Amino acid sequence: MSLHRQTLPQKADLPFLAYVGMETDLIFNRGMDLPGFASYPLLETKEGRETLCGYFRQLMRIAQTHGLGVILESPTWVANADRARPLGYTPAQLADFNKAAIALMVDMRNEIGDLPTVISANIGPRDDAYAPGTQMTAKDAEAYHRQQITTLSDTKVDIVSAYTLAYPAEAIGIVNAARSCDLPVIVAFTVETDSCLPTGMSLGDAICAVDDATDGYARYFMINCAHPDHFTPSLDDAPWMRRLQGVVANASRCSHAELDEATELDDGNPAELADQLAALRQQNPSLNVLGGCCGTDMRHMEQLAQRLARSS
Image (cartoon, rainbow, N blue to C red; front, top):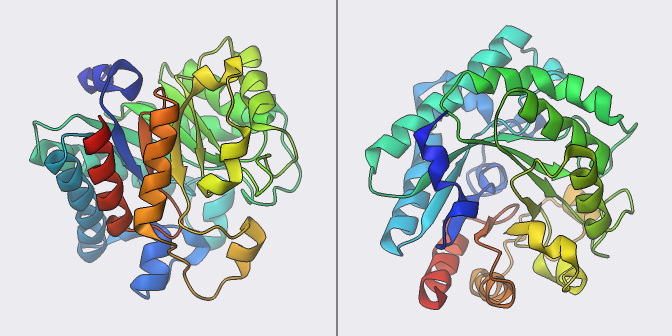
């Protein structure tokens, strides 16, 4: 077990920054082509690896400057079999990508040794996160995601982070696959503008369903790929809120359907988004993982870090 797992956010009082907005930044702001929304092919070239390292370094320096922790998210969100097949990658190549991503992040962590840093293996849904087609059973989801998670278990990863999930059965399968590999795991659901998952289930019911089916094995739950305006109304004093520990928000107030059709990036208002996330932490002290998803860049992360540092 990695010694750095002792710095996982649920064991710390300070806030941790997390960033998963790189792909939209690369596509819209830097004009890069990322077929299938996949960033892991950047690992194939020196230039691509430097691009990834640039994001990691910027985020770590922001966290260090403001006395915060940082979660480095691997560029492996769509590095699974179904998403990779149209890109022409084999299972063996996918395994190599997953291992290379974690190795690169370990190197980044070693560059700044005095910063609380968690290395997260970011995995995503099998299908479209916004509009999942046929929903898997929990058993099928466990079998499907076990391949990627088993590969990751042979690395120095600290935690598996399942991002942008749309229904609980897939989350249950991922949690069980991680448990079978003795890896800590978190689950991040996405919600629509009505605070519900794309499949219509409430966030609270989804969290409870996963916990009930897995004996509460997930370390904590998160919300990602949604603007605070979309989910804040659903955050109350219900017992499930004690399991919610992170928010990684979109810059835009647009719906998922609108974002899918967008030809220009809506980067929102970095200062306003930072204010909203900092206010959420003030109202819900258990929220100590905060950051940016679609449409955000390091401007948003800097603004957020400033506010978290002031309020901590």
